[in-house]
Image (cartoon, rainbow, N blue to C red; front, side):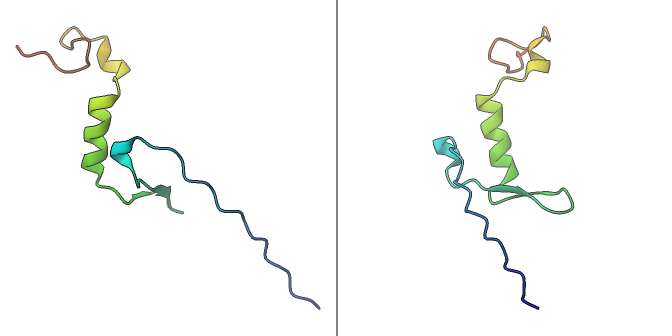
Length: 71
């Protein structure tokens, strides 16, 4: 009997990311846990600054930038 040849999968190209997130690599392991090479607080800070939260946009206490209005 001959041994089966393993198929080589081609390397996936790196996705384009924002210049502030250069080098970001996120994977999901076999248990569904998110693994990242970047601090989660840094990612959250970037998202807070650059992405509008659609759920919060409907609230009256948020302005057009998605930031909480000062009382």
